[in-house]
Image 1: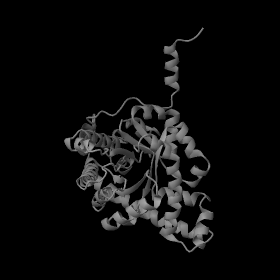
Image 2: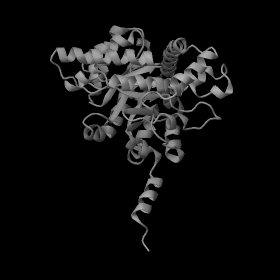
Image 3: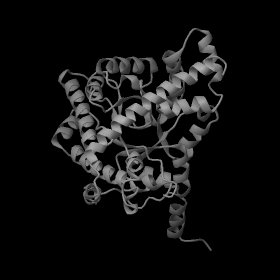
Image 4: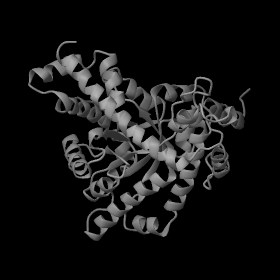
Length: 372
């Protein structure tokens, strides 16, 4: 006897991967990882086909670990070194080779969504974090060298980065704003994006230059884990994200945003970054489970992506009013946590960590170039 259609649908729903459920809710899943092995093995293509993956991000730490941890890059590094290349110039060639190949894998998604999705992110040298003029110059050069319409240039939302974001957007360079930790830092980045688009409109240029703004989540919980009561652990980052999401929805609904949309611009999307769980006693998918929201992106480490596909749960979506964010943040304030000061500290330390990774990366390349 045939089962009812209702039963069939229920079974299909139960079998649907959590990654597909998130995609259907309107959140895009990106991978926060890139290695030559992911590309050459076909693994990245499989994630695109099977896990609803629609984009990818990278950073100096990821590349440093990839070059140190495997031999995929050894021959290419030695060959380029023999051609007289070294240091940053050599690395940029490696990075562009990987990321343009990844961009080509995502290109069908990019084309099918009219450029909304299918993006790959390439980071500026973190040594430029305090240098507005050279950040603008290098962002334009990297975008030109990549020769792909679906590559974001990552620029940090630091005090020097904010004007660089505006100038780069005005110059037609798609930007992934990185190292954002708070609502206030997000709003500064969003306003820089809008100013760049408004200047393009005033100059008679195409207003369709895409951007995402990346809020780092898990580092909040790492930095306070030994300073708050047990009942508050692993709650700070999600509360900050909820507060920021409320500001994001308000900005999307603002008159300013509507005017830009009427002129043909697309809104800058909010992206959740640093969403791998750092606490071994907590759920390995807690940030993904908690931050399901339409019109956003979650870029996650490979381990987290696989864990979420295996046993993640989409229980609902973030409330557009931020839910209980302010109540939770008030609790943190009562135990001495100053979120504004911590946001500044996290951004500063994040920039310093990328500089360290960049310097380590240069050493790794030099060692490999010498046959190590």
